[in-house]
Image (cartoon, rainbow, N blue to C red; front, top):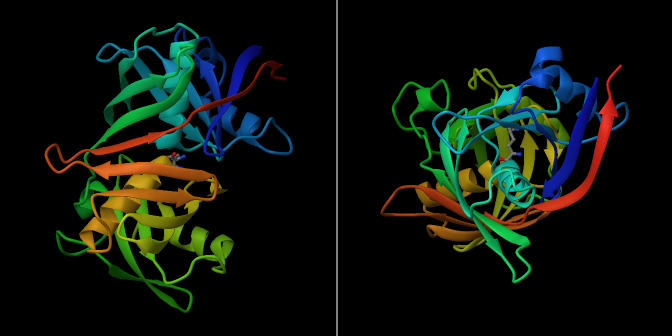
Amino acid sequence: MEIALTKMHGLGNDFLLADDRNGSIAEKLSYGELAVKICDRHFGIGADGLILILPSTSCDLGFAIYNSDGSEAGMCGNGIRCFARYVYEKTILRQKIMTIETASGPVVCLLENDGEDLVTSVRVDMGPPRLMPEEIPFIWPTSEAIEVPLKVLDQAFQVTPVSMGNPHAVIFMDKIDDIPLEVWGPLVEKHPAFPEKTNVEFVEVLSREKMRVRVWERGAGVTLACGTGACAVLVAGVLTGRSERKAEIILPGGSLAVEWDERSGHLHKRGPAEWVFETKIKLF
Ligand SMILES: N[C@H](CCC[C@H](N)C(=O)O)C(=O)O
């Protein structure tokens, strides 16, 4: 079976995109199986995840995201920008404002471009944060969980759980450069308080408008950036009194401008989406 794949990235958070609007891939193998095969950085092409372009009866198009471990996620902030640029420049959907159906609800993207009609950045209305423990999900006895204790090894982290359609555990620290991310990350990701596991963001506050983040992603491990994570960090920064509602979120792969709009309650973020290469693979 031959599959056309396009590699793109958003701040180094890299994805393989496949157009399966006709369902020809899904007929042969599950998207989770395909993700595991092609995202492996040694036995496959290598990526943090697989993104599918799908039909939709309620929105302009459908979007699905599978992590490199084959698990499906409800949303992907960097991936949706790549998706929007892909469908626009491949003339699948030649409109600058598009509504995309995702597993966690509709998302609106606005394409920005230079004179040559090449997309230079994408603004995304990411919708509202979900903060009730049962929405995240996070096992907690009360309706509010802001900076609550989470025991991991000899650490008692203060966690602010936030969902952007996928779960995030935001942990503020004085310094993040020397933390054992590959030790703490998976322990928080798989902590029993998060029944569907969680993405993990360790945050260093530089000012009320600037925060630095290191990310351990659910189902993917260390990534250079996480768009939903950047939104979750801003929400946690506001809820804990550390940040304004508009801030620069600095990730290892680059920065995202994120705003928690007071009027709508929605998160808005703006960032790049880059092409890497196109290929066709034969799966054996
Ligand atoms: N690993 C995430 C999905 C990818 C999200 C991330 N790449 C982003 O840009 O938001 C999860 O399992 O919820």
